[in-house]
Image (cartoon, rainbow, N blue to C red; front, side, top):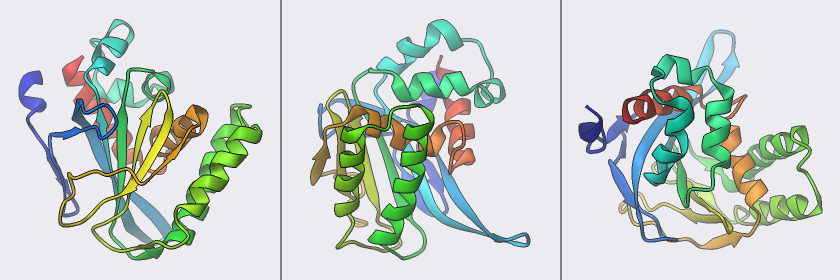
Length: 217
């Protein structure tokens, strides 16, 4: 089951996630750890799906996690905040996480909400210092001239040197080119935490990652 899983991609809301990607930072192969939608509740009766998120990790994560988490089911891992903290903070080379738009949105609107969530994570962990404030400002500027259209979106490459940021081309979704870098690891980890941490914007992604990794550990 586990070796076959590494060959399986996912299709979510029409967005294809191949089973693997090559890191534009390390040139190493990363496997698809999971993917899921982000929903926004407009009112008690109406919920819309606005983006799809994808997550790719180097296989070093499996060794990093196996001692503590091997043998647990996906449903068990999904409930373990420490499991996702180990994923987020683990320095096992590169992690790629991407956002694909399903609805059009100005880049400034997108970055504003992302910055609010990331700043909150940093503040709650007592990690919001001057350097992190600068990183948030750098992040904001990357989206000033962006008009995010369905099928495209930002991708992030997190490593020991910080965060690389680029924007996907709908015609070449696997061709990742970093356009900017933010040299702050705390910011990079906090950004990932907004997606799959304690209060995630995409619970569906957490569930998918837990299920897939449980089969690999």
